[in-house]
Image 1 (cartoon, rainbow, N blue to C red):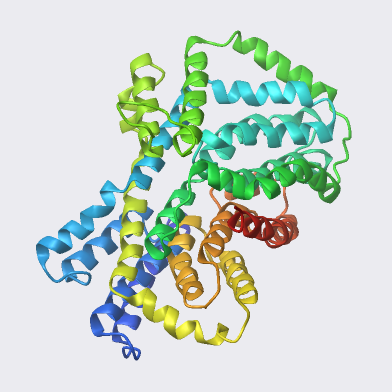
Image 2: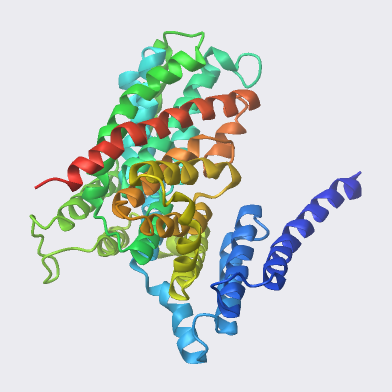
Length: 494
């Protein structure tokens, strides 16, 4: 039995390992399209193989990107000079956005070790959890408060919110399966739908946001501060945070309408935790400091003298806060070293960003824009932009990683948009980047926390796909009907 059960898994692994090589070989041997040279086409073959490996998860994502970067560098696709090719390979390791992501992952360690994240969620449940709808708002608000300083929605929703709310349904006899509808389905779906919103609302709430902004900067020269990101999405994001618990209530139709026991349970858990510890107070102060420096340091109207500089770079803020966390003992350096996911992300994002920028450097993106913008040439800029945003959003059904989606699709969409006269590329880029968090709601594999909520047993397979489509349509409509006009008004301001 053991041998037979292991064989399919081994075969599946070999198939996933071979598939990227097949994609690379097929493109490599395909006749070079008109307008490209052999070098550009072979580079694209490597890039396509890397994306295939990321989607199929042929091996750890960091390894996939690292191998692809090595192949492209050794082959000299970007620069035939070995020294210059090496410098191109290493350039991504100095990207501030990559260090912002890795550094911010360390914040999650502070939340976890200090127990501040657990306390915040329990306080909200105690205050707002006397009825089921109020409980939904407490769950959504927990994610909202944690989101600005937690760049991994998997760590935030899966590592902090989920472990707490998974205790709630069982109090009412709502177990995975036949009794899930009592309250469990509603609680779980509300938490999942909320983290998709917060992931788009705050630049620092989703790791791929920074990667997407780096791509947009390299591809189309788009630069956005933390405050500008928030203000651009706030009209839709805040509205959805108000509406989603209610919409989830109507869609999931929980059988339990009131839940006074939840407040009592949360109160007991808080009592067991005791008063806030020294480390919790320190962590809270450091997060407030980070928020202040992120917002004020990115505003040209507010001067924040730090270390002799008038402005504080977002990545510098992360280094400052982590240093203070180490000095105060909230975390230890061993915690940083052992944070495997952070260092995997480091290699993952570094490789992807470098490879994506390489497509632009060798001229592939410009060629693609010239060729594939032609069918949109006869359309109005507004229609073309809507079609491009729709493509970017809904094609995510074919991706299991938001980061690989951004790396593969965003440069192409921006390049096509840049080739259409009159189309505001900055607005297009913002709509696509705001899509990254929202699109995570559409499938059981669309974002990091999705498999966890799907595997909880409280949301059935059919329900998950159905709810995902309903909320996906809602979120996408909000982008076009609220965010798009709002961005146009802001861009046309004085």
